Length: 382
Image (tube, rainbow, N blue to C red; front, side, top):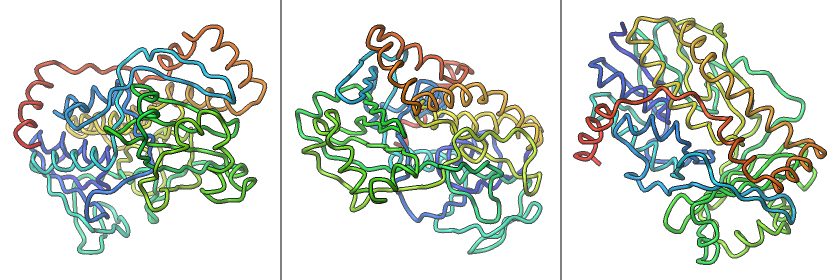
């Protein structure tokens, strides 16, 4: 059983695992390099599994201002297919959600230290910019960004992916059209996902192959200009106002990566979230994987498991989802398969519903008593 833990990274996985361990009565320190609330490159789509895990922490998305999503629309050129999702999802800004998780962890008794840069790990010692810290367990939850001293052994691809995120203030007609839907625009070399994350605001997550970005000029502005002639883009974003001075961006995304057990670096380090598994973002389950890894890691630490045992358990748990999501993403990037898939979905829109259902993580279930207990406590602090 863990006596004390250091969590490197205060995102979804870091905040969630710190909360669960602190509530179990164990000492936890979270080291977060940012000094305050901030945005992250993310689709910001909370699927049913993510909502379930957040509810078990006393943070149901609707309480944080999450926007309900129960439909999916897929656009390809002039064609649009719409279907109901087989679950209720939510759109919610990472700036809001990550901060709520860190506050919840602190309320549970975790020490949250901001503005700290971790420079290395030696055995059970974390080397940081302010001071070195020793711990019985070290959890690496730095998201898509590798810590320089602890890179993932993720395979590199010949034509990697580049991800962008931009929030937009939508005019009334676009808000009304988007409503409770997530709109997916299939590009053949990636996709764009647009959904509401606030009363008037929407998040655009755009993922393309590097070759496509290079082909259009290599800049965000050039990429938008290339995509705007598509009817769905022009209709929804033509009069929208960008809310960031520039988009958030990240390159070399290792989609399909799953740490199976063995790892580079100290065996004592537990990798969570994108550090352990990165599913295709098209499936909308990236945040679910992060939160689920935190739940399983907390259980494993409390049961006395090793990091390797946890990584193998997580790989068994999320591996099928990652493989299915990657198959769907690769098919969407093959012109013939994409055209056939859009045609099939136009003839049978329920195909989209089945696709959404097929790419979910297995449910672990959350006792209502647990949800009610932590929800009551969270109401007092949020």
